[in-house]
Image (cartoon, rainbow, N blue to C red; front, side, top):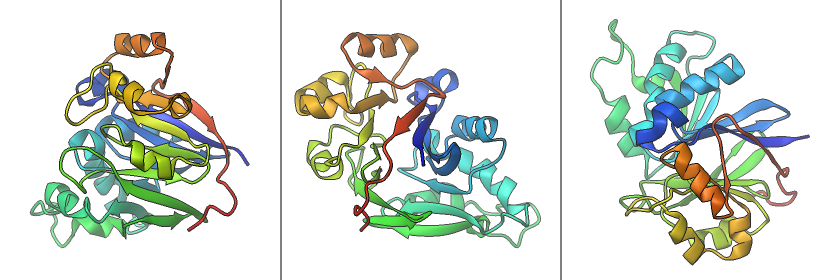
Length: 251
């Protein structure tokens, strides 16, 4: 019963064309279970990898390098009677108003009319977490722009995906306390909305850093510089083996 995390893209917004928009898929036995975020480049990478479209997605926040692919997914899903209304979209309630205003509220979502953007999806608003495929996933806020607009995801005992964030030591002390692999936003240089490697080295204990796999960086050269400092750095398309979800960790 093997679990894995496949990085569809690892770049920041400026590097999405070369490194792919930051996104991943939690896999079980080589099959996609849950896509995390859906930038334009990420959806294309998903289609290439799995020769199909995602059936379930979690959205961390609504910057366009993380959600632009949802527009194309809407059209591919809405006009497919076998998929319409069945694609699960797990959205933190703090993110939902922003997703509504950015994508769902556009007038006349199809030329023929008589359609709502949400008709294509099965919306599942989430607060502290959700059930999917028989597993519980924790959801918790991170530090990216305004409070309660960006969130992380945890499959207990297996993996944490931070999404875009500054360092969050207090959150990871709680939500990465079972040996999880931590896929973490990290560039060579930080800024008020994203972590830099100096930030992580200053704020995280060595044991936690050893479990981190860094993504959302600016270039291949920056990735090499991060590796030179002793960190593990994800590559586009990399498939990372995970521990299976911990028994008894369901909420």
